[in-house]
Length: 181
Image (cartoon, rainbow, N blue to C red):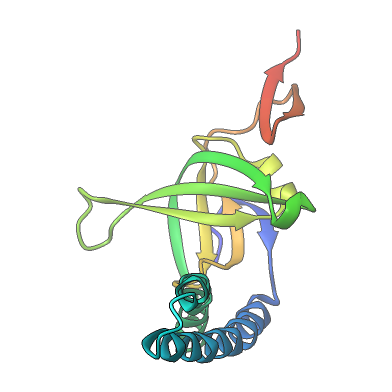
């Protein structure tokens, strides 16, 4: 699905399996947390006012896991779409307990129904794909519409490229590129 002259940066042939795994993980988690939250609400109604702490904690968990479950289930019924846009920002941050890193790209694209308006979408990338991209690059992203799970990522010919001689350093969770002399 890549344009002529584009460079493929990342391909995930198992993206559908990722969506199924997300649905299987988040849907039961949401149901269990909602059931326990329902018990906490009943206890609160019956006079156990300390149950409000459990309601708040479980409500937060239900909202987070429920959102993930709904987007994954919606993607199971959808087909991948393509987005062509400009990379506005690249960043990375630590994940759970800072055991690993997650790499992100913010892509701005024009809306098909109204070219005067733009969409801004965040995608999770592999480290190699993020290092190959530069802010200002034009990319073609084939992805699932609701979870934004990437199927294929490629740069479009003629877009801004990463400087050939750049030294990358990591400092406090940010990646900065300094040209060498």
